[in-house]
Image 1 (cartoon, rainbow, N blue to C red):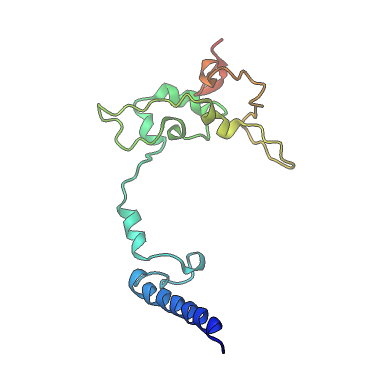
Image 2 (image 1 turned 135 degrees about the horizontal axis):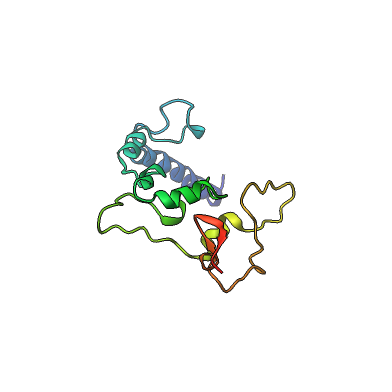
Length: 156
């Protein structure tokens, strides 16, 4: 064979060999050796313990109940009863520490994550009302007119 063919071939073979050598040093020993329970076996077994040691950021609705009974009562009687408090207020990892305040995200985009009208065929709309963002009071935040704990209650 001519050198103009052999040189690129040797370079390609060297590149593939260097990738295999680098893989031996860079990929952890516990990567993909724990069975078929994870997609394609691409999972590091020690990662399970790392996630168990990671601090929980979301506490759930039960942690809000002892201080915010009236808001929870309104929420449980409304169409937002399936929405967790932390979806709007953010994670309550350190709340109710004196310095930790959970502000309500009043951004319109937050409400539109669930309430945007998506014109897809065979879409199950569920219990939440869908709005067309372009025509529904665009200049206002949703909380200006609607109580987030009970959206049927209007402020106007």
